[in-house]
Image (cartoon, rainbow, N blue to C red; front, side, top):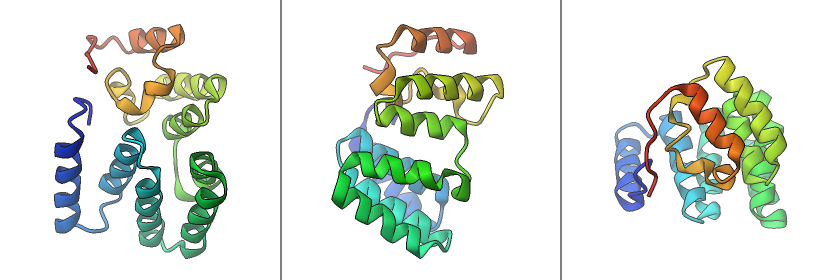
Length: 154
């Protein structure tokens, strides 16, 4: 996904899910791909699969209802509300806040994630999910703190 080869990335994730249908990491990354490509409805369906694997059928229904009523904001808000229950860390919560346009909270959580060296922070510079806040100067400052060579996302 970092190279924005969406079709190839989607095919790869779908193939992985054929081999292991309940692979949560792949399902979650696939949902992120769908959001990045404007297919939030498919992200909702994918998160419903995640919540099914986690045996949370009521929450799976709720994310669908909220998306229908509120659009993508309902998707992001529902995941934030479920974040403790489903074990989403500050790095993922930052992504959700960025998706809602809440840059202040997104940056505060990203700083925490970087300080704590949470899983995924090393991909901050190239991961497309950060596009909503990439143009903020604080983003470059956070990437510089990682001391990783810059990567083009174009």
